[in-house]
Image (cartoon, rainbow, N blue to C red):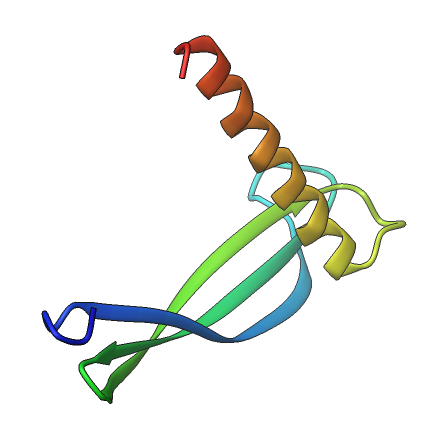
Length: 90
C-alpha cells in the first residue's frame, strides 16, 4: 500500500462520555453516550493528519455503563449486517 501511496487509516484512540438530554417537548431525560474515535491518516511513510469521528447512542437504559452501551450497539450493528447479507443471498 505504501508503494502506491494509498492512505492508511489507523485508529489510535477512543473516548467515551455520557450526558443527559431532554428534547424540547419531552417530559423525560434521555441518556446520550458519545464515542469519539481518533484516526491517524498515513500516506507513505508519514502521518498526514488526525481525523475525528463521532458516534452517538441515545438510550433510556440507566443500569449499563457507557462502555457496555457502546459494546451492545456494536453487537447489534453486526447482527443487522448479518441479516442484510442473508437477505441478499451473499
